[in-house]
Image (cartoon, rainbow, N blue to C red; front, side, top):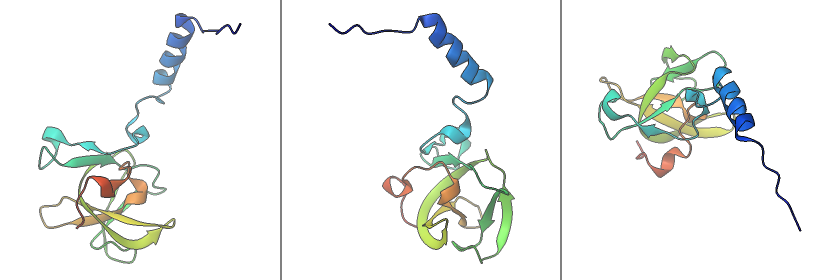
Length: 126
């Protein structure tokens, strides 16, 4: 007969508390998918994501190309509103770019550095 060994609830609670204290649980960059922006976006139905793992911040471009004009840079952890996706120059062998909301027209970032998951499944093509 097989007996299942379970950890006491106090051990599980202590491990969870340690993760939170270390900032490892539920950190913005840990999200695997985009989420609804709600009242923080230009449209409550829009999708938002976080910038993650960009070595020197994420460069925002005028076109979906690493050689186009860099307009500004976003720090890791910054929340952005993603309105559409398109293809562009390859970043780490990934060619999907996100179109970000801007009052003056779309601005583009490599989706490689966003927590969007599979952006093509829920955001329209630009």
